[in-house]
Length: 251
Image 1 (cartoon, helix red, strand yellow):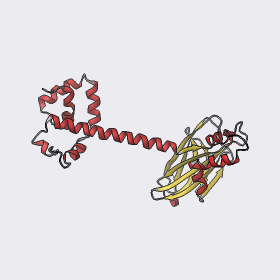
Image 2 (cartoon, one colour; image 1 turned 30 degrees about the vertical axis):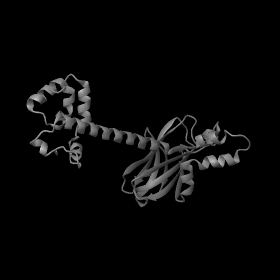
Image 3 (cartoon, one colour; image 1 turned 120 degrees about the horizontal axis):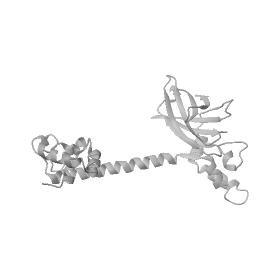
Image 4 (cartoon, one colour; image 1 turned 135 degrees about the horizontal axis):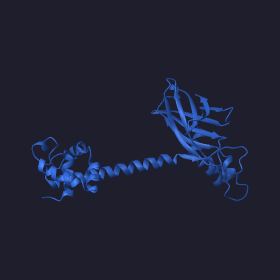
């Protein structure tokens, strides 16, 4: 009889007979490792079927498995291959999240780099600002909308760019105090709301004319995107995570 740990793949495929399945389920009740493996393999039959049908696989399809069970060696090989593919997918998703986080580039960090050199720093400042992809994108987009809330005094400018997938945005935020967490929400003409991007405001704030440091005087630039087409957007609102509206701007 094979090691119970090696039976998890066959059990996930449903190819064990009643006696074998019963023995494995008794083992599963006390084995956390097998429970985790079974959870990982849940719903993997279509992936195994695709692998089994690959040229040169030499393994039966899922339909054929109804009448002929694949050998434990074949099951183990397919399970390992699926697990590896899933691991690659998780790593790829992690890199995508990390790349999305890199799009959030704020003015205060630019100010630090610009002030780190000697002399008047004029040329170094220009080069540093040009290296800020969000600020650079903001400057290159001609279509911009802007507004300042009379109560909160928060100012926002949203640069809009038509994309194949919807609407790309670069937002400039000024005169916002922290600490705070905020989101830019696109509101469609049909009333639908979509979160374009979110960010954190440090305690020193962004774009404050009377800021105590050079960092706090710099605005925030942040990229985002909405599934709405440009002509479908009615307005944008900036809200904090408590739902308080900081500023609204018509599209």
